[in-house]
Length: 277
Length: 152
Image (cartoon, rainbow over the protein chains, first blue to last red):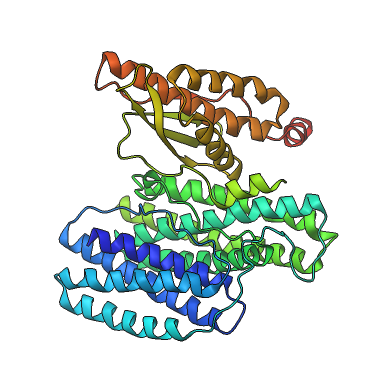
């Protein structure tokens, strides 16, 4: 099961990256499939927790640099078929059947998608319709690498916390934060693909998601969200003269952080209330 | 920003843990909680032992990842003395970097030094715990420090 979790984790990220690469109607299909694979990941994780098998979020390197979409889709299909084979040894037959049926459908669709030229790795660092100065381009580049990783990290942390909690109130908050981080990750990934600097986020260190002190984690998280707000404001100012559209986008992301902070404060108050009797 | 830097951002070299590691060490920034862990495998059946495998993991920003990617590439294949020279050379360059970049590079260099020192300690004491070194560079950009100091 642990191998199944790792392979599904890799397939999810590979599918998500393929979605960023696509410039056609295939994009939405690939996004939907990556969402399905993330759900498989959570099902497998719950099975590991149920059976008491130790696991973590480590995974291998996922090479995604291609010039044609079909090149990555072929690799993804092979990964999915490998997962399907692994499912034969899964104890929970209902779970295996559910995942296997999804894989059969996804493989069929993936094999029929049209090929496309991929420009997501050309390093040109130009956003279509936007002229940025070199300084603004560098600031945006660093921001996208920092924040795309950060959003992936948050998805993994909140997912881990949710998987290990039976508190409905907290889990509702964790799920909203996961959804919000997915939206941000998708927004930043799209921008990275357009700029030719697409990359898979690096592996998250275990100590970040195996949280011992939830109160401290939430307090630190609120501070980090405040810092992220500042970062968005700085970036909005840096690109403001060159692109009103980009400036508005980063102001929008900045304002969304207020909601995250409010949710984390709610989670903190609830956690403290429950644990103080 | 040159293409080589962007390449390190897109595909950091040597990122991850190392199951065959015979030593690890940590560089830490107490100011912001960022840290870098370096894992090394030193090949011992040679006249001069050398680092034949090296990886790193980080809780840090993209600059730290780029520094980790570049410095671990440099350290690969070096003898222990060679790795110490690399660390010393990196430390001498820190003054020329912006403060936030200096703190990131120092953290990686210190993690390499910590891993090498841990390895040497383990030659005498097998279970010697991983060594941690803390950075001395302030990673706050200068203009922010000025703002803070001049604020009412």
